Amino acid sequence: MRRADPLHSSPAAHLSATRPDHPVLHFAPAVLQDTAAAFRAGFPGLVTYAVKANDRAEVLSNLVAAGVETFDVASPAEMARVRAVCPAARLHYNNPVRSEAEIAAGRDFGVQSWSVDDAEELAKLRDVPRAVELAVRFRLPVRGAAYDFGSKFGATP
Image 1 (tube, one colour):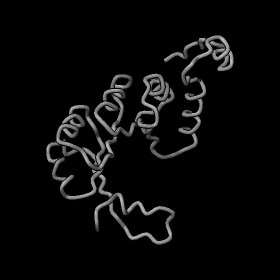
Image 2: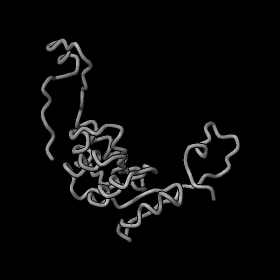
Image 3: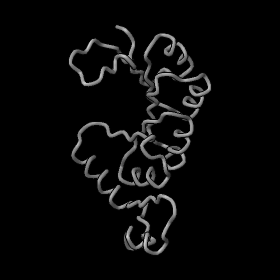
Image 4: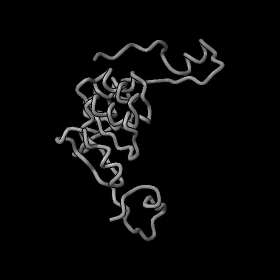
């Protein structure tokens, strides 16, 4: 993907020229690509972008151009947005509570990694391909934590 030329020389130039009445997003594709590439170069693990942070096609396509290939999605709409810019992307669907329709969409979009918090949610995944990754989140006793995520997430061991 080639980088697009900016419409204005700077955010200040844009604001001066347009004087918008509503909030404006100033997006710098080169900065995003360079930052993502630098992160990938310095991080030996799997880099996964949480689509809920910003699901705009411009953001997703620039991340793909920087080599990001794995996306954490929270809905079928996010799956569709990722597939539109990167048909071969690896999708992780870590929302622990899903409807049957959401699971079917995930299966159809080729989600490769799922998470579950309890046996009921695991049973709902009976029709996903056997080759997918399943992560079981456990609720463990944690003392002294700033926030006890076990009160919100996880299966009892």
